[in-house]
Length: 396
Image: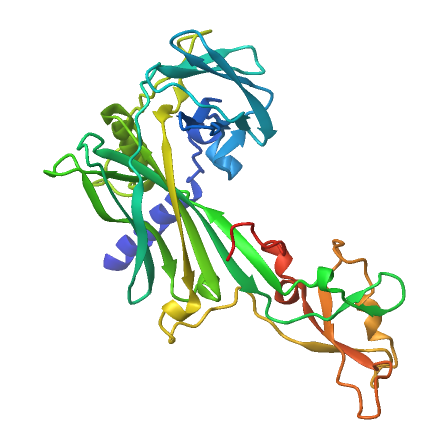
């Protein structure tokens, strides 16, 4: 009887498995094409405002948003002054350097290429206190960057931060030769070196802080960024530029809900998604939602540099590729073929999968034409595929 029960159970299980069909919710494939507005109306002296416009896309697209192109963006003051922003490409719009009067309120007006108009609410500018300092602490598995600030007038209380990281790094091997793309290898000029590069990264999370429950408007060692101990960012020198914004209570609540919706979901006991209520509205059709909360005020920044000598000597950088060296002979002693032909491709072409590093050392009597070249894959030799060989203007 027991064996018959087990057989019946197995048959039912197989039938259930065969009847299973993939379920793709409409939200995954039919996400509404909402406008997303990001940015701050900068009221600092002789400074520009940068606004990013994008559109929501289906989750199946594999990207967060798509850039909104061809829009007309204007800053409007409550005394009818207009300031136009210019398209930079990729959904970015920037104003000329402006000095906006902090005694007036401001909003954005956006005309999109599909003929719709969006405006943000008028908002009073909020002066942002200076960043007192940016520092770091050494943890067991990495480096924690933090920020300190305070408002001596005890009137800000709500803060937001973002950052840009920059770091110097090298390729695994130093290539001293390059293909001429025709018939041979030639010595690289210094301008063609691809050993020393600089990488960069921008923050992708929502960083908030508040002192509303404290007796003084002080933010102490607010976590900003974490760098793992094996990260290439700490190989030589690392820099981070921290930007600080003051918020009003409504703005803080909006970004806090956005943070919860995007970063803290995962289980039934985690915060559940909530309807975001920003301050951007479609005047052409009020039923069309828009995503974003536009603030106004001054912006404060501070940059620090961290040298490799400032981190524990036991921290070892892990190179992001498995690198090996092989030999390409003009006449392979085993096959008789010209292996160097595999390296004779135009530099930077899509087929540039390998790069010569250097020939074997010449004999004591002087330089001669090498019989072979050592080479490796492009990721191990050309740092420019992950960064730029141009040193940033602020680097020191």
